Length: 564
Image (cartoon, rainbow, N blue to C red; front, top):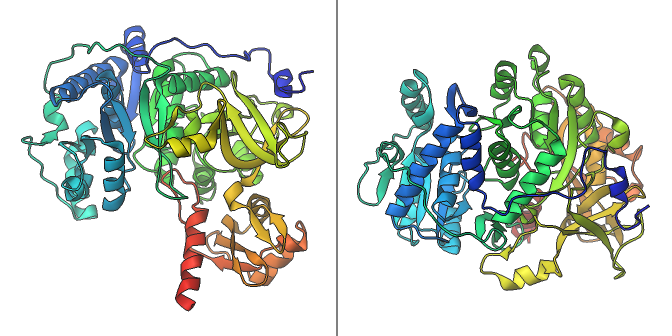
């Protein structure tokens, strides 16, 4: 048995231990799929269908327009869109034109937009009409030269496209009127042009950056992760191999946003590479997701724990037919075991937990995509992907920790980023000899399955004890009245830090702090039991549904500062 990579012995027969990919840039896969499956539905968006041939042709039109605006190889284009046909077309158009995509969260406010545009050096932004006022306010503070504006109605079928502006005006109380002139450009006008010639650039997939994916910035300013064409192609191919699905046969529900690396790879890129249908929703709405699954019958549903929790807690979930879902890959945050088991029971599909980071394109580990539970370990992030190495570096300096010994998780593989944009010091701090330091504390068992205990920076040190929030959260999620829970360390004059739990209860439920204390004491050592409970209507989250623990910690610090 391989003692360094014991997980390889667990690979099923159909799964190769190494992955192969073509030495071509990412955008070439759209061209290949459009040639092989021209009439296959590429995108289903609220009733509108686009074939792969139409997506490729539209991408070429936009690529040529970007070139007309002066885009040269290596220039950056900010894409600030929700999941919609334009987000796919703009992404591949930028790559076809030789540019670098800068993924920009549509929820960003002016200060965040200004920082990212200035840091990336993007001089073109593609955005929604609703977001145009926000972009306009920061334009003079950046080097932005051009703003391309689109609307969700541009790809809605009749009569939705007629009704949308009326509904939007009522709901948002915003009516944006942009003219196609000067430095403002309308998507609909660009799509009227007939220029669809291919732009010839020589690419080095191993070195050329395709995407600048900005990290959340929980410590300091957000950093631009440089993901090369090879990073993205290799990781997408790993996901294709892992799912073991037939080319052209699957339909993937795209709720996880494409401006997040997880949605970009596991929905958009994997679909384009393997000729799958993308079923896109511009935002996560529980009822809309349930209706879409019942009507369109997607087969693969990548998501995050909060997405699955939101669906499970909908009172009418059992009225919907979710049986088309044969597989869910959960990422972005730890998946509570109870949530995993309940969602499998309701859909009849397989729910596996995976692991990844922006810096790794993103996926590095997952449980095997199989029905047999003996090959999946609940609570584990699974085993490393093909062509991926991983190790737990012991806290005492040993190269590899012993089985079940805790340490920091390090990753090596073709999906590991080139580095941080214009930030060699931060790059050097996390990349050594090809190994990426994740900042996550975990361990590997004897079979090669990995477990994440917590983030290094989230570990609570109370009275000299190391306490891992995830362990406490798992216990809280077992309580039948709790919908969401997150645990954080807050300042304490005696213990240094103390354990605080933030709780969202299920609708109509009540529970006292005393009851929760007794519940936790049945499963946790006394020093791990939360000393403070705070009940909330909702918890702060990222766009992908990851609970922002650090935001809660910052709130606590500000409270203390006010008192002092």
